[in-house]
Length: 269
Image (tube, rainbow, N blue to C red; front, side, top):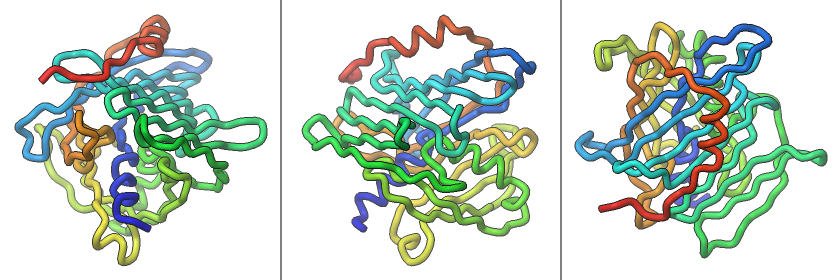
């Protein structure tokens, strides 16, 4: 296994986002929408790299869908991820497209089984491989549900291993999640967790650190490699913060609008 593949692993944990706030309640038998935003800055916290705009769809009180727009600091979106949790909360179907880098990822459920389609950039060969669904498999933003399901065990300071589907080639890697500490972040009490590869690979591969609110177990900060590349197609270390503010009500019209919103190929300098 090459280090470049391990680097991509951190990118698509979900971090990419990586990067969730799925605690919005809804009454049984209803479909509701809400939204929230995050800011991705350089590792030193000084430079705003891009913004994340999350839109959630809740059906019968359960997270059903999500759209994430990755936007330039000046406003226009350059990448979009659409997730469908109806089949699995930990390994949802998804479609990710980045018009700056030309990358594409799609995990879909077909009558014949699950399939992954992946392209690194416009000049890369498109890879199409079958995916074997196994119990407890984690893919992309399903990492958030893994944290929720494993919260009680993680809080005992006992590391937990889980299998992550690598969206670059369909391989499955074993990762270890463990609790690091309790601390205060922006005036809120949070629990900090570390995620890394198991075994000797964990010593050389990049890890990620995530901070979840102690009270309602919602992601507040992600530290690691960005889920999207920069203008030159390079991976960058980032800190993504999600403010501890209530989600903003939204509707199906906004969902349709964000699904069809054109994406730009460049951000202004």
